[in-house]
Structures are given as structure tokens and as C-alpha cells.
Image (cartoon, rainbow over all chains, first blue to last red):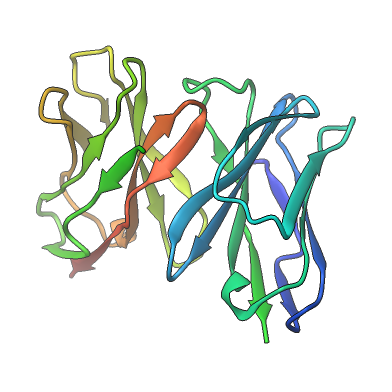
Length: 114
Length: 112
């Protein structure tokens, strides 16, 4: 158990819908990262937050948005869902936001878009 | 763009034997870190080993060790005395700033 929690574990929804994935980082960690794992694209970095502020952005679609709240939990919002958005979404956290800070991964949220 | 390449989609090894997984990377950064992650069927991402690029000494964690060749941008993982529990997908990753860039993964099968 990494100490990072993600809810829900599984999510099944229809095309065009909007969903919110939630992540609680390990106690004391200030940085949160979101990754997407799909069959087509592999494991890709989406976005990073550090202490409430966006720190880095990767291959995140405009239909996707994220935020980190004052209690440091983070939410990833996916809207106008398409079949290709079906993937495993991981949240990771680290104590700082530097390359040398180890990232601890949550168990992931499996999103299925029908 | 940073890229990580794992040229072996699948590998197999006999229990108690040794196996080496290959990884090459490409980066323009002078300070970076390299990792091997294990993803078992549960899908949990588990850190196996890390290597700081500025360190010449190869990292070792129990049965896991790396062969880091900085000039060749190569970072292979050696698993000694393979166990059934080592069966998983293994991902090589490098830091690009604070984000991780992953390879395509190598599926390791351990035969009893």
C-alpha cells in the first residue's frame, strides 16, 4: 500500500458524459501527478500540481482539467468523454515536486467509456 | 522530446535463473533520474530501483541491479534468482523535469 488513495476504483460511463476522479496523496506529500495508461498510448504524464499550483503539463486534452485543493487532494475532470478515453488513470504523489523526489502511485481508477 | 525505448515486449525466464531487461533513453538534460517500475496483474505501480544519473555506481536492491551506461544512454535491469512473484510488466522511466516518461514496457514471465 503506497498511501495514495484513488476513488472510484472503477467507473463505467457513456460517451459525451463527464466524470471526476479523486486522489488523496500520502500524508505530507505536496505534489500530485496524474498519468493515463491506455493500450494505444501507453503510460503518459498528464499534469502535475504542487501545493495547489499547476507545476507541469503534459499530453492533457483540453476536455480534461485538474485541480489541487487546499487539503492537497486532487481531482481530475474528464468531459465530453470519447471511447478513446477508456484507460487506467493513475495518481502519484511526492513530498516535493523535484525530479529526485520519489513518486508513489495510487491503485488507479479504471475508466470505461461505452 | 524525451523518449524511453524498451525493445523487448516480452521476456521469459526459468525460476531461479537470471534475466536482463533492456532500456535505452534519450534526454538533453544534464541532471536526471532513471527508474524501473513493476506492474503486476493488480495494476499497482511499484518502484523496483532508481538510479541517479550523476552517480557512476550502479544501483542495487537485493536481487535487482542495473547496468547504467550513461554515454550509451542505456539502463538495463538484471533480476537474479528469479521468483514466480517477479512475473509482471516492467517499465523503464526517466525524469523529464519532475514528470516521468515511460517506455512501452516488457512483460516478464517466470516459468516454474
